[in-house]
Image (cartoon, rainbow, N blue to C red; front, side):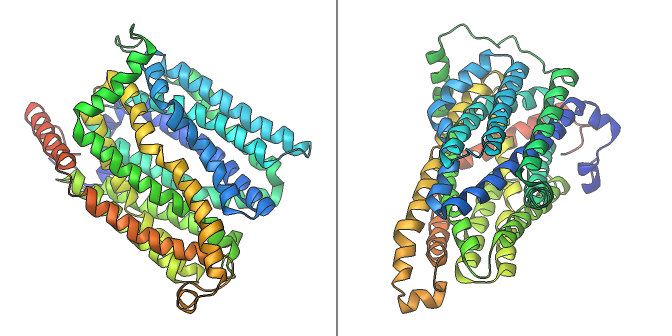
Length: 454
């Protein structure tokens, strides 16, 4: 008997029995992520107000993601040999120490943009180690047949954080200033830390703690991907998408904060609409049955996302239209994320996931710092100076003054993003993941004929 849409979101007691440890971890980690995101949102506004440069602000994200590129492969090998729970606790504690450092520097009147670069690098390094440990912890805590639901719940919490971040951060900033934002961040950290420390037991596996050298363990993740070309091509697809997306992210504050129709409130509403879209998309993922072709869903989702938002933000000058573009650009992303995560979890053995996820992070995220640097550079040094010359055709399309250069870049990113989707959608190796996924589902259905379809 197939489950209904409401049963997908609100499953019965028996279905939740095996999900309770995961749900506890998921809820508290999402709460902590909200606090961290609020601090990050407030600091981006602070840095742009201090410097007025898209490149300077983009460097904050570069410093956060650079450790992924430099250290992820080694972090995954360490994650596979270290205890997952202790790894997550230590990384969370060190990241919280960085937030405390921001507070002390701010109170002393000594906070500089250079301090934020350094502290963001520390936070990124901790996340580099924690992320593969967290991914494996989820695989160990959640039953395999619940991976589709797990993906939907993770998309739901991510979208909720995106919705609440600008609203909550703006409200807390208005009433309590940066001090209150940081205190809330530390409170959410404490909640998640104590819950993980006291209330959650993450199972250990006998494969944990391999005896081979760190370098050899690190190479294993790359070797696994080289032997599984479909996963490798999918990672390169997402790396190319990340390049386009982060160039967009680097230019967004320059466009919205600079144009007359924009400002801090408009930027907050655009982010809120992105969160609402993620929320709607994650609910739809939970309501709809498992797709016959996960790869087709991934390709279609990214094709729609890459084109719509970039076009509407580049060719219009109205905050309401920007919000509509943000919603349409993000509503399909939970479909992409959920189906991508299921493919990875289904195709990678649990005792290899730390190393493989870390190798994936290096390959998939190395374009993120490049995208932020390139996007900030192009806005500040190429497109804004070009628009300052006021070419008649370009000013008719993208307006005049500061922010018009970012609008021009967004049009080019729309074209680039659609081209990336068309190229990778023709990869036969990526499509082979669908055939393997369908075979595994058929085998599970034959072995458990009474299991509800998820």
